[in-house]
Image (cartoon, rainbow, N blue to C red; front, side, top):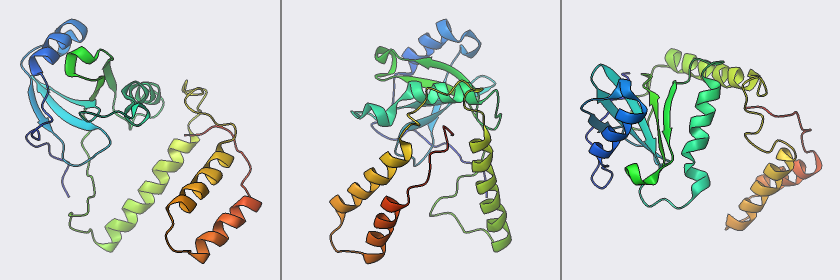
Length: 207
């Protein structure tokens, strides 16, 4: 397994490199200079590019072209989370700069440092059983580490709406199921009914 490699930018997802270069010159002087742009494959929520600028490798994130669902493509939210998380959980990349001016690249965007890593995709060759076990253990442990972060200490207490979260999730997903179901599935119906009677207690805000 090898770290994710960027590829040529997909047709229709190019942006104005000169405009970005001018913006960087005034906002992030250490990243001034010619920019070589490539793009990471897959990933449909937001577009992710690799910028080679001299000795620097920087990742740029922006919404898909034509996106209209702001809550699903909130660059300022992503940038704020990274900015607050990185000092207390260094596994996340360092956030470098955020631009909310759509005249630069057509939409808000932000920059972060590149962190090399492996992304397991459907077309990847499956690892052996021992490696898969280590991956799964690390996956669960990483989530546990994130959940242990002090939300208030990290400055993320206003990130979401923790009050009533369990109720919103149970009611919301139950409603989505009933709206989408074509044929009854008794096990799901029993689960929904059980959750309605036995909702887990609220435990406070957590990532």
